[in-house]
Image (tube, rainbow, N blue to C red; front, top):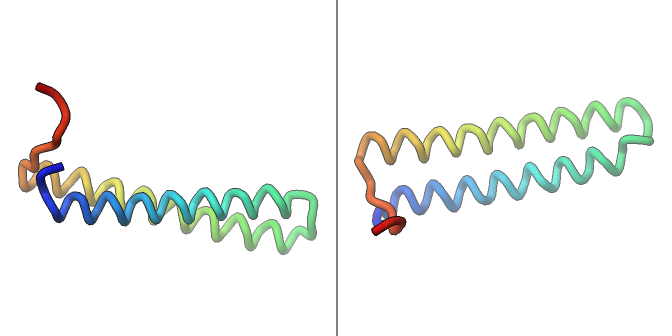
Length: 74
């Protein structure tokens, strides 16, 4: 991208996606564990997913609002 702000948002999105992946990994590990542990992990995974979705929306809105250019295409 040619927009530093959009690049920063993309980095935040990547961090959110990584946190979501880790939370889902924990969720899988506790699948056969106590019910309370599973529900706690599920809430953490849902929160991480919401953060990831929010970061993606922020990137989209920033690019649209500022008409940022990407390095893709001709």
